[in-house]
Length: 316
Image (cartoon, rainbow, N blue to C red; front, side, top):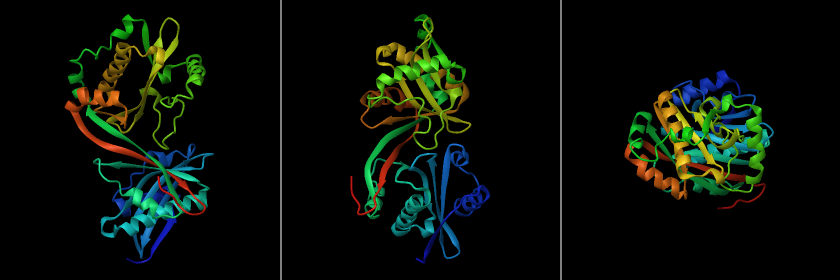
């Protein structure tokens, strides 16, 4: 292998050229285009006169955390050494040029197998892997939701008879959103609670207000829970977060809310996806019973949390 060189690419036209030479297309991930929210980090890797690899990431403004979303080396140049060199250089450039102090490396595994990325991190002296979170990503065709409709839990009309309503986030007034902000102060210490206002907690997956919903006690105009979604493509939507307040977790109401939203999604999108965090036994049971028979595909979504050290290294 020849000498590898690395460079930051900042202009959109240059990123398109880099993408075309390395990946064979000019499509740019949406998160790289959101200048008002993120500082983009795009690294090109060259060997001789050949562009052979690239890395994409973003840093939220006023943050020192890099979200690394994409890392690629052409097959004919791919080796343990070249991949390690690209990830090491991407992290080093982020530290030196952007003041980054840690990273969240997001990637997908096709199967539940040994993860070679941890060995890569162990071989980079200034990187310490603090933890790895994993979840199973489920994807179904929305036409197959008809299978779930056969079960008792699928009862979208129960909401109305119990005095509940469903509002899109885009239709909610500040009064209702203010109530959510007020109520959530008592849940901050709950590790299972994820604020719906943390829109950029994964560095790129945007909260879509037209496809996210709040369950409301219609008479009191009181929020009871929500489903937050992100649009992945013209054909696919992802449920990012489904949360019900503890005093609203009636089995049938929660499932009625979910099934009400599934019916809406089925009218708009061809595919639906969602993640099940490792260890969430209730959701794992629901997936086995109701979604596994209609599974379109599944994979393992990983987030590796990496601290950058001034000296030495470390292991999880």
